[in-house]
Length: 300
Image (cartoon, rainbow, N blue to C red):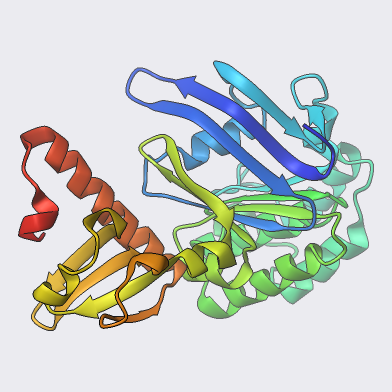
């Protein structure tokens, strides 16, 4: 492990009674934005909690900026800005009170920056948290995370309650944040289109396992969406088909770029395609394991 990475997870595992996170290896380079995708229950929040030292891993190593967070808890306080899907603060206080509190929490708290974000996000300074909409609470959480000179931002489904215009504004802020190559972001979101715009890297969790982790552009070069009749798709090597669906207009399959015959029409893949077709493919494999039938042969 070395300090060219903002986050490093090596062989990280965590077991609960009903869930297991298995052998996770993720590296987030400094100056980059990594998108963490996966279904509900795939392990995204568990991974983030492990990074934040909120829970302890059973196996493996986790470092932030080259240092073990369990030995350096001050890193979590000063160098990491965290935005969860809820604002975990007393609902009876307002942003002005938050500003006073945070001055005593963070040594690098900047009241001017915080007030600028309140204005930019149109957050009433004197309105109590309980009277704010979910979207406005999320914007307040983001304003807090951006106001103490953090080097790493971690978003856990933080943009889910925001309208498209504000989400786009947040994406712009994130991209500006990482321009100097010293600041980094780990962003978990169900809104895959946001990750498509912002992220340099994608880490894909499914059922507690890391099934993909690479540069976004490399992933998009590796796979394509093939479209054609059932007969045309059958000409593609089955091992190169990672997931597919069929409707009245034909068969659509996520395939490895190098394995597609020139006679088959293909289109560029999006991260949303990657998510949907990979999950479909994993379901097929699981069902095949359960009943021994070649479901890919039969269609879905």
